[in-house]
Length: 211
Length: 277
Image (cartoon, rainbow over all chains, first blue to last red):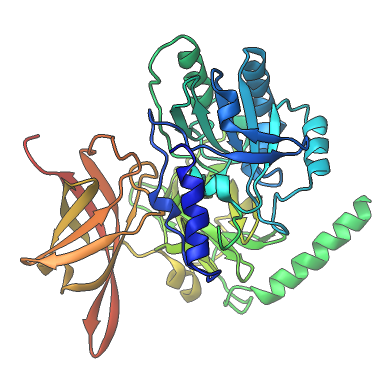
Protein backbone atom coordinates (compact mmCIF):
# COMPACT_ATOMS: atom_id res chain seq x y z
CA UNK A 1 0.00 0.00 0.00
CA UNK A 2 2.73 2.40 0.93
CA UNK A 3 4.50 2.05 -2.42
CA UNK A 4 1.38 2.59 -4.51
CA UNK A 5 2.30 5.98 -5.99
CA UNK A 6 5.60 4.76 -7.40
CA UNK A 7 4.18 1.52 -8.77
CA UNK A 8 1.28 3.33 -10.35
CA UNK A 9 3.60 5.74 -12.06
CA UNK A 10 5.87 3.03 -13.38
CA UNK A 11 2.90 1.00 -14.48
CA UNK A 12 1.41 3.95 -16.32
CA UNK A 13 4.70 4.56 -18.10
CA UNK A 14 4.89 0.94 -19.17
CA UNK A 15 1.29 1.02 -20.37
CA UNK A 16 2.01 4.16 -22.33
CA UNK A 17 4.68 2.22 -24.22
CA UNK A 18 7.11 5.10 -23.94
CA UNK A 19 4.76 7.56 -25.64
CA UNK A 20 4.74 11.07 -24.27
CA UNK A 21 1.46 10.82 -22.46
CA UNK A 22 0.75 13.51 -19.94
CA UNK A 23 0.79 11.76 -16.61
CA UNK A 24 -2.05 12.18 -14.17
CA UNK A 25 0.43 13.07 -11.44
CA UNK A 26 -1.21 16.37 -10.60
CA UNK A 27 -4.44 14.69 -9.61
CA UNK A 28 -2.63 12.39 -7.17
CA UNK A 29 -1.74 14.98 -4.60
CA UNK A 30 -0.45 13.99 -1.21
CA UNK A 31 -2.94 14.79 1.52
CA UNK A 32 -2.28 16.38 4.91
CA UNK A 33 -2.75 14.00 7.85
CA UNK A 34 -2.53 10.95 5.59
CA UNK A 35 0.49 8.69 5.07
CA UNK A 36 3.13 10.46 3.03
CA UNK A 37 3.94 8.72 -0.28
CA UNK A 38 6.63 6.08 0.23
CA UNK A 39 9.82 6.33 -1.79
CA UNK A 40 13.32 5.03 -2.09
CA UNK A 41 15.94 7.23 -3.66
CA UNK A 42 19.66 7.14 -4.36
CA UNK A 43 21.62 9.49 -2.13
CA UNK A 44 24.73 11.39 -3.16
CA UNK A 45 26.42 9.44 -0.34
CA UNK A 46 26.05 6.35 -2.53
CA UNK A 47 23.40 4.85 -0.28
CA UNK A 48 19.74 4.16 -0.82
CA UNK A 49 17.37 6.16 1.35
CA UNK A 50 13.83 4.96 1.92
CA UNK A 51 11.28 7.07 3.74
CA UNK A 52 10.32 3.93 5.66
CA UNK A 53 13.85 3.83 7.15
CA UNK A 54 13.09 6.99 9.08
CA UNK A 55 9.91 5.98 10.80
CA UNK A 56 9.93 7.34 14.35
CA UNK A 57 11.62 10.57 13.28
CA UNK A 58 10.46 13.87 11.90
CA UNK A 59 11.42 14.02 8.22
CA UNK A 60 11.70 17.22 6.19
CA UNK A 61 11.80 17.06 2.40
CA UNK A 62 13.27 20.03 0.56
CA UNK A 63 13.02 20.15 -3.23
CA UNK A 64 16.02 22.05 -4.47
CA UNK A 65 17.86 23.46 -7.49
CA UNK A 66 20.95 25.40 -6.45
CA UNK A 67 20.75 27.69 -9.48
CA UNK A 68 17.17 28.80 -8.84
CA UNK A 69 17.09 32.37 -7.47
CA UNK A 70 14.38 31.49 -4.94
CA UNK A 71 16.58 28.71 -3.56
CA UNK A 72 19.61 30.99 -3.63
CA UNK A 73 17.66 33.52 -1.52
CA UNK A 74 17.29 31.00 1.30
CA UNK A 75 20.88 29.73 1.11
CA UNK A 76 22.50 33.18 0.78
CA UNK A 77 20.55 34.35 3.83
CA UNK A 78 21.59 31.11 5.60
CA UNK A 79 17.90 30.55 6.42
CA UNK A 80 17.79 27.08 4.89
CA UNK A 81 20.99 25.94 6.59
CA UNK A 82 19.74 27.21 9.96
CA UNK A 83 16.51 25.20 9.74
CA UNK A 84 18.45 22.13 8.57
CA UNK A 85 20.81 22.33 11.53
CA UNK A 86 17.94 22.66 13.99
CA UNK A 87 16.07 19.70 12.52
CA UNK A 88 19.11 17.42 12.52
CA UNK A 89 20.17 18.55 15.99
CA UNK A 90 16.72 17.69 17.32
CA UNK A 91 17.09 14.16 15.97
CA UNK A 92 15.12 14.70 12.77
CA UNK A 93 16.02 13.84 9.19
CA UNK A 94 16.44 16.34 6.36
CA UNK A 95 16.36 15.08 2.81
CA UNK A 96 17.19 17.52 0.02
CA UNK A 97 15.79 16.19 -3.25
CA UNK A 98 16.85 17.19 -6.75
CA UNK A 99 14.30 16.32 -9.44
CA UNK A 100 15.89 18.25 -12.33
CA UNK A 101 16.27 16.07 -15.40
CA UNK A 102 19.80 15.51 -16.74
CA UNK A 103 21.04 18.55 -18.66
CA UNK A 104 18.57 20.92 -17.04
CA UNK A 105 19.10 23.61 -14.44
CA UNK A 106 19.82 22.24 -11.00
CA UNK A 107 20.82 18.76 -12.20
CA UNK A 108 24.09 17.80 -10.55
CA UNK A 109 26.35 14.81 -10.12
CA UNK A 110 26.59 13.28 -6.67
CA UNK A 111 30.07 14.78 -6.28
CA UNK A 112 28.85 18.25 -7.21
CA UNK A 113 25.90 17.94 -4.82
CA UNK A 114 28.24 17.03 -1.99
CA UNK A 115 30.51 19.91 -2.87
CA UNK A 116 27.48 22.27 -2.73
CA UNK A 117 26.56 20.94 0.69
CA UNK A 118 30.08 21.69 1.89
CA UNK A 119 30.48 25.10 0.27
CA UNK A 120 27.09 26.29 1.49
CA UNK A 121 27.67 24.91 4.99
CA UNK A 122 24.46 22.95 4.62
CA UNK A 123 23.63 19.93 6.76
CA UNK A 124 21.03 17.74 5.10
CA UNK A 125 20.97 14.15 6.36
CA UNK A 126 21.15 13.16 2.69
CA UNK A 127 20.79 14.63 -0.77
CA UNK A 128 18.67 12.44 -3.06
CA UNK A 129 18.99 12.50 -6.84
CA UNK A 130 15.63 12.02 -8.56
CA UNK A 131 16.46 12.71 -12.23
CA UNK A 132 13.43 10.74 -13.43
CA UNK A 133 11.14 12.88 -11.31
CA UNK A 134 9.49 9.85 -9.67
CA UNK A 135 9.65 11.13 -6.10
CA UNK A 136 8.86 14.69 -7.19
CA UNK A 137 5.72 13.71 -9.05
CA UNK A 138 4.59 11.41 -6.22
CA UNK A 139 4.62 14.45 -3.94
CA UNK A 140 3.26 16.79 -6.62
CA UNK A 141 6.31 18.96 -5.94
CA UNK A 142 6.11 21.89 -8.35
CA UNK A 143 8.77 24.40 -7.47
CA UNK A 144 12.09 24.85 -5.73
CA UNK A 145 12.02 25.23 -2.82
CA UNK A 146 8.91 23.11 -2.13
CA UNK A 147 8.80 21.83 1.44
CA UNK A 148 7.16 18.84 3.11
CA UNK A 149 7.18 17.74 6.74
CA UNK A 150 6.40 14.16 7.75
CA UNK A 151 5.82 13.21 11.37
CA UNK A 152 7.24 10.24 13.29
CA UNK A 153 4.26 8.09 12.28
CA UNK A 154 4.83 8.76 8.59
CA UNK A 155 1.92 11.17 8.16
CA UNK A 156 2.27 14.33 6.10
CA UNK A 157 1.82 17.33 8.41
CA UNK A 158 2.97 20.23 6.25
CA UNK A 159 3.35 20.99 2.55
CA UNK A 160 4.01 24.24 0.77
CA UNK A 161 6.29 27.22 0.86
CA UNK A 162 9.24 27.76 3.14
CA UNK A 163 7.78 31.14 4.16
CA UNK A 164 5.14 33.67 3.24
CA UNK A 165 6.90 36.22 1.02
CA UNK A 166 7.07 35.28 -2.62
CA UNK A 167 10.24 36.97 -3.76
CA UNK A 168 13.89 36.39 -4.60
CA UNK A 169 15.07 39.12 -2.22
CA UNK A 170 17.17 38.13 0.79
CA UNK A 171 15.79 41.21 2.60
CA UNK A 172 12.37 39.56 2.76
CA UNK A 173 13.52 36.51 4.75
CA UNK A 174 13.32 38.14 8.22
CA UNK A 175 10.00 39.84 7.32
CA UNK A 176 8.23 36.66 6.21
CA UNK A 177 6.07 34.33 8.26
CA UNK A 178 8.33 31.25 8.53
CA UNK A 179 5.80 28.52 7.77
CA UNK A 180 8.24 25.60 7.93
CA UNK A 181 9.88 26.76 11.14
CA UNK A 182 6.49 27.41 12.74
CA UNK A 183 5.22 23.98 11.72
CA UNK A 184 8.34 22.29 13.11
CA UNK A 185 7.96 24.14 16.42
CA UNK A 186 4.32 23.13 16.71
CA UNK A 187 5.09 19.54 15.76
CA UNK A 188 7.83 19.31 18.38
CA UNK A 189 5.44 20.67 20.99
CA UNK A 190 2.81 18.11 20.04
CA UNK A 191 0.44 20.82 18.87
CA UNK A 192 -1.66 20.75 15.73
CA UNK A 193 -0.09 22.62 12.81
CA UNK A 194 -1.81 26.00 12.43
CA UNK A 195 -1.04 26.33 8.73
CA UNK A 196 -0.52 22.83 7.30
CA UNK A 197 -0.80 23.72 3.62
CA UNK A 198 0.47 26.85 1.91
CA UNK A 199 1.14 27.87 -1.64
CA UNK A 200 4.78 27.15 -2.45
CA UNK A 201 6.71 29.70 -4.48
CA UNK A 202 9.82 29.33 -6.56
CA UNK A 203 11.15 28.06 -9.90
CA UNK A 204 9.29 25.29 -11.68
CA UNK A 205 10.98 21.93 -11.22
CA UNK A 206 12.72 20.94 -14.43
CA UNK A 207 11.06 17.54 -14.79
CA UNK A 208 11.85 15.00 -17.44
CA UNK A 209 8.99 15.18 -19.99
CA UNK A 210 7.97 11.60 -19.23
CA UNK A 211 7.92 12.17 -15.48
CA UNK B 1 37.99 40.48 -15.00
CA UNK B 2 35.90 43.59 -14.46
CA UNK B 3 36.76 44.90 -17.91
CA UNK B 4 35.81 41.62 -19.51
CA UNK B 5 32.49 41.52 -17.71
CA UNK B 6 31.74 45.08 -18.62
CA UNK B 7 32.45 44.55 -22.27
CA UNK B 8 30.28 41.46 -22.36
CA UNK B 9 27.45 43.42 -20.80
CA UNK B 10 27.71 46.23 -23.33
CA UNK B 11 27.80 43.86 -26.30
CA UNK B 12 24.77 41.98 -25.02
CA UNK B 13 23.04 45.24 -24.28
CA UNK B 14 23.58 46.50 -27.78
CA UNK B 15 22.24 43.27 -29.23
CA UNK B 16 19.16 43.38 -27.04
CA UNK B 17 18.60 47.03 -27.87
CA UNK B 18 18.74 46.41 -31.58
CA UNK B 19 16.58 43.33 -31.52
CA UNK B 20 13.87 44.50 -29.18
CA UNK B 21 13.83 48.24 -29.66
CA UNK B 22 10.45 49.77 -28.92
CA UNK B 23 8.67 50.73 -32.09
CA UNK B 24 8.97 54.44 -31.50
CA UNK B 25 11.66 55.06 -34.10
CA UNK B 26 13.82 56.76 -31.47
CA UNK B 27 12.38 60.15 -32.31
CA UNK B 28 9.54 60.08 -29.84
CA UNK B 29 8.89 63.20 -27.84
CA UNK B 30 7.18 61.26 -25.08
CA UNK B 31 8.31 61.63 -21.47
CA UNK B 32 10.44 58.57 -21.00
CA UNK B 33 13.47 57.50 -18.98
CA UNK B 34 16.69 56.33 -20.56
CA UNK B 35 16.41 52.56 -21.07
CA UNK B 36 17.74 50.06 -18.59
CA UNK B 37 19.24 47.19 -20.54
CA UNK B 38 19.87 43.92 -18.72
CA UNK B 39 20.94 40.60 -20.24
CA UNK B 40 17.32 39.61 -20.91
CA UNK B 41 15.26 42.78 -20.82
CA UNK B 42 15.07 46.30 -22.13
CA UNK B 43 13.00 48.42 -19.74
CA UNK B 44 11.89 52.05 -19.55
CA UNK B 45 9.73 54.15 -17.30
CA UNK B 46 7.31 56.33 -19.21
CA UNK B 47 4.97 59.08 -18.00
CA UNK B 48 1.40 58.32 -19.04
CA UNK B 49 -0.19 61.46 -17.58
CA UNK B 50 -1.35 63.11 -14.41
CA UNK B 51 -4.44 61.96 -12.53
CA UNK B 52 -7.06 64.33 -11.10
CA UNK B 53 -5.66 63.75 -7.61
CA UNK B 54 -2.23 64.95 -8.72
CA UNK B 55 -0.58 61.54 -8.88
CA UNK B 56 1.57 60.74 -11.88
CA UNK B 57 0.63 57.67 -13.87
CA UNK B 58 3.74 55.71 -14.82
CA UNK B 59 4.25 52.87 -17.25
CA UNK B 60 6.96 50.29 -16.63
CA UNK B 61 7.55 49.13 -20.17
CA UNK B 62 9.53 45.94 -20.69
CA UNK B 63 10.62 43.99 -23.74
CA UNK B 64 12.09 40.59 -22.91
CA UNK B 65 14.18 38.34 -25.13
CA UNK B 66 12.20 36.05 -27.45
CA UNK B 67 11.14 32.90 -25.62
CA UNK B 68 11.52 34.49 -22.18
CA UNK B 69 8.68 35.68 -20.00
CA UNK B 70 7.91 37.93 -17.05
CA UNK B 71 5.05 37.40 -14.59
CA UNK B 72 1.51 38.62 -13.99
CA UNK B 73 0.12 39.96 -10.68
CA UNK B 74 -0.62 36.36 -9.69
CA UNK B 75 2.33 34.46 -11.16
CA UNK B 76 0.57 31.10 -10.79
CA UNK B 77 2.54 28.08 -9.59
CA UNK B 78 5.99 29.63 -10.04
CA UNK B 79 7.65 32.99 -10.46
CA UNK B 80 7.25 36.42 -8.96
CA UNK B 81 5.44 39.57 -10.09
CA UNK B 82 7.46 42.72 -10.87
CA UNK B 83 7.76 45.44 -8.24
CA UNK B 84 8.31 49.18 -8.43
CA UNK B 85 9.37 51.62 -5.72
CA UNK B 86 10.44 55.22 -5.53
CA UNK B 87 14.16 55.75 -4.87
CA UNK B 88 13.44 57.95 -1.86
CA UNK B 89 15.04 57.32 1.53
CA UNK B 90 11.88 55.60 2.74
CA UNK B 91 11.71 53.68 -0.56
CA UNK B 92 7.95 53.76 -0.71
CA UNK B 93 6.60 51.00 -2.92
CA UNK B 94 4.26 52.00 -5.70
CA UNK B 95 1.55 49.44 -6.25
CA UNK B 96 1.29 48.24 -9.81
CA UNK B 97 -2.37 48.70 -10.65
CA UNK B 98 -2.54 48.13 -14.38
CA UNK B 99 -1.68 44.63 -15.53
CA UNK B 100 -1.74 43.32 -19.07
CA UNK B 101 -3.82 40.21 -19.73
CA UNK B 102 -1.66 37.19 -18.87
CA UNK B 103 -0.83 34.07 -20.82
CA UNK B 104 -1.10 30.60 -19.36
CA UNK B 105 2.43 29.18 -19.41
CA UNK B 106 2.49 25.40 -18.93
CA UNK B 107 5.90 23.87 -18.28
CA UNK B 108 5.67 20.12 -17.75
CA UNK B 109 2.18 20.41 -16.29
CA UNK B 110 3.13 23.24 -13.89
CA UNK B 111 1.18 26.33 -14.83
CA UNK B 112 2.34 29.92 -14.40
CA UNK B 113 0.80 33.19 -15.55
CA UNK B 114 2.98 35.68 -17.38
CA UNK B 115 3.92 37.65 -20.43
CA UNK B 116 6.16 37.14 -23.44
CA UNK B 117 7.56 39.87 -25.70
CA UNK B 118 6.68 43.44 -24.82
CA UNK B 119 4.37 44.53 -22.00
CA UNK B 120 3.65 47.54 -19.85
CA UNK B 121 2.67 47.58 -16.17
CA UNK B 122 1.03 50.72 -14.79
CA UNK B 123 1.52 52.39 -11.40
CA UNK B 124 0.33 55.70 -9.99
CA UNK B 125 2.89 57.59 -7.90
CA UNK B 126 2.27 60.37 -5.40
CA UNK B 127 5.24 62.73 -5.71
CA UNK B 128 6.21 65.66 -3.51
CA UNK B 129 4.59 68.92 -4.65
CA UNK B 130 6.52 70.52 -7.46
CA UNK B 131 8.62 67.43 -8.18
CA UNK B 132 9.84 67.33 -11.74
CA UNK B 133 11.84 64.15 -11.55
CA UNK B 134 10.90 60.57 -10.78
CA UNK B 135 13.58 58.22 -9.56
CA UNK B 136 12.36 54.69 -9.19
CA UNK B 137 13.62 51.15 -8.94
CA UNK B 138 12.01 48.08 -10.37
CA UNK B 139 12.63 44.39 -9.87
CA UNK B 140 11.37 41.62 -12.09
CA UNK B 141 11.94 37.96 -12.69
CA UNK B 142 12.49 36.80 -16.24
CA UNK B 143 12.38 33.10 -17.08
CA UNK B 144 12.81 30.77 -20.00
CA UNK B 145 13.95 27.35 -18.84
CA UNK B 146 15.84 29.09 -16.07
CA UNK B 147 14.85 32.17 -14.09
CA UNK B 148 16.91 35.29 -13.60
CA UNK B 149 16.01 38.10 -11.20
CA UNK B 150 16.71 41.47 -12.79
CA UNK B 151 16.44 45.03 -11.54
CA UNK B 152 16.82 48.56 -12.82
CA UNK B 153 16.97 52.16 -11.65
CA UNK B 154 15.08 54.69 -13.70
CA UNK B 155 15.24 58.46 -13.86
CA UNK B 156 12.35 60.20 -15.51
CA UNK B 157 12.46 63.95 -16.13
CA UNK B 158 8.83 65.04 -16.11
CA UNK B 159 9.64 68.47 -17.48
CA UNK B 160 11.30 67.14 -20.63
CA UNK B 161 8.92 65.43 -22.98
CA UNK B 162 5.41 65.32 -24.25
CA UNK B 163 2.47 62.96 -24.04
CA UNK B 164 2.88 59.19 -24.48
CA UNK B 165 3.43 57.92 -28.00
CA UNK B 166 0.89 55.82 -29.86
CA UNK B 167 3.18 52.81 -29.38
CA UNK B 168 3.14 53.33 -25.61
CA UNK B 169 -0.61 53.84 -25.50
CA UNK B 170 -1.09 50.63 -27.49
CA UNK B 171 0.69 48.74 -24.70
CA UNK B 172 -1.35 50.32 -21.93
CA UNK B 173 -3.46 47.66 -20.21
CA UNK B 174 -7.14 48.13 -20.92
CA UNK B 175 -9.48 47.55 -17.98
CA UNK B 176 -11.95 44.77 -18.69
CA UNK B 177 -15.68 45.21 -18.09
CA UNK B 178 -16.76 44.12 -14.63
CA UNK B 179 -19.01 41.11 -14.17
CA UNK B 180 -20.39 39.61 -11.01
CA UNK B 181 -20.37 35.89 -10.37
CA UNK B 182 -21.60 33.50 -7.72
CA UNK B 183 -19.14 31.30 -5.87
CA UNK B 184 -20.30 27.89 -4.65
CA UNK B 185 -18.93 24.43 -3.92
CA UNK B 186 -19.60 21.71 -6.47
CA UNK B 187 -18.21 18.55 -4.90
CA UNK B 188 -14.52 19.16 -4.36
CA UNK B 189 -14.48 22.09 -6.81
CA UNK B 190 -15.09 25.80 -6.49
CA UNK B 191 -17.76 26.80 -8.99
CA UNK B 192 -18.14 30.25 -10.55
CA UNK B 193 -21.56 30.84 -12.07
CA UNK B 194 -22.03 33.77 -14.43
CA UNK B 195 -25.02 34.95 -16.44
CA UNK B 196 -24.13 34.29 -20.08
CA UNK B 197 -26.09 37.37 -21.18
CA UNK B 198 -23.44 39.46 -19.39
CA UNK B 199 -20.71 37.83 -21.45
CA UNK B 200 -22.14 38.65 -24.87
CA UNK B 201 -22.66 35.02 -25.82
CA UNK B 202 -22.15 31.43 -24.77
CA UNK B 203 -18.43 30.70 -24.40
CA UNK B 204 -16.81 27.93 -26.40
CA UNK B 205 -13.72 28.26 -24.21
CA UNK B 206 -13.29 29.73 -20.75
CA UNK B 207 -10.41 30.20 -18.35
CA UNK B 208 -10.24 32.03 -15.04
CA UNK B 209 -7.04 33.71 -13.86
CA UNK B 210 -7.52 34.34 -10.11
CA UNK B 211 -5.99 37.50 -8.65
CA UNK B 212 -4.99 35.90 -5.32
CA UNK B 213 -2.31 33.24 -5.64
CA UNK B 214 -3.44 30.94 -2.83
CA UNK B 215 -7.05 30.00 -3.59
CA UNK B 216 -6.98 27.99 -6.81
CA UNK B 217 -4.69 25.16 -7.92
CA UNK B 218 -3.26 26.84 -11.03
CA UNK B 219 -1.97 23.62 -12.55
CA UNK B 220 -5.29 21.79 -12.31
CA UNK B 221 -7.61 21.64 -15.30
CA UNK B 222 -10.59 23.99 -15.33
CA UNK B 223 -13.88 22.61 -16.63
CA UNK B 224 -16.84 24.63 -17.83
CA UNK B 225 -20.33 24.08 -19.13
CA UNK B 226 -23.22 26.31 -20.13
CA UNK B 227 -26.61 25.45 -18.74
CA UNK B 228 -29.83 27.41 -18.35
CA UNK B 229 -28.26 30.64 -19.53
CA UNK B 230 -25.35 30.41 -17.09
CA UNK B 231 -21.69 29.65 -17.46
CA UNK B 232 -20.47 27.28 -14.74
CA UNK B 233 -16.70 27.16 -14.38
CA UNK B 234 -15.22 24.59 -12.01
CA UNK B 235 -11.86 25.25 -10.39
CA UNK B 236 -9.79 22.95 -8.20
CA UNK B 237 -9.21 24.72 -4.89
CA UNK B 238 -5.62 24.96 -3.75
CA UNK B 239 -6.57 23.45 -0.42
CA UNK B 240 -9.23 20.81 -1.02
CA UNK B 241 -10.25 20.82 2.63
CA UNK B 242 -10.16 24.56 3.08
CA UNK B 243 -13.19 26.82 3.43
CA UNK B 244 -14.82 28.42 0.44
CA UNK B 245 -13.58 32.03 0.43
CA UNK B 246 -16.20 34.76 0.74
CA UNK B 247 -14.97 36.36 -2.48
CA UNK B 248 -12.78 35.40 -5.39
CA UNK B 249 -11.73 38.12 -7.82
CA UNK B 250 -10.00 37.39 -11.11
CA UNK B 251 -9.83 37.77 -14.85
CA UNK B 252 -12.15 35.61 -16.96
CA UNK B 253 -11.01 34.96 -20.51
CA UNK B 254 -13.57 33.45 -22.84
CA UNK B 255 -13.87 32.71 -26.51
CA UNK B 256 -17.16 33.04 -28.26
CA UNK B 257 -18.07 32.03 -31.80
CA UNK B 258 -18.24 35.09 -34.03
CA UNK B 259 -18.26 35.52 -37.81
CA UNK B 260 -17.30 31.91 -38.42
CA UNK B 261 -14.30 32.32 -36.14
CA UNK B 262 -13.51 32.84 -32.47
CA UNK B 263 -13.38 36.05 -30.55
CA UNK B 264 -11.59 36.51 -27.23
CA UNK B 265 -13.26 38.54 -24.50
CA UNK B 266 -12.06 39.33 -21.00
CA UNK B 267 -13.99 40.29 -17.89
CA UNK B 268 -12.97 41.53 -14.49
CA UNK B 269 -14.88 39.08 -12.31
CA UNK B 270 -15.83 39.37 -8.68
CA UNK B 271 -17.29 36.08 -7.49
CA UNK B 272 -19.14 36.23 -4.17
CA UNK B 273 -20.02 33.26 -2.04
CA UNK B 274 -23.66 32.36 -2.39
CA UNK B 275 -25.95 31.90 0.58
CA UNK B 276 -26.62 33.84 3.74
CA UNK B 277 -23.82 36.25 4.52
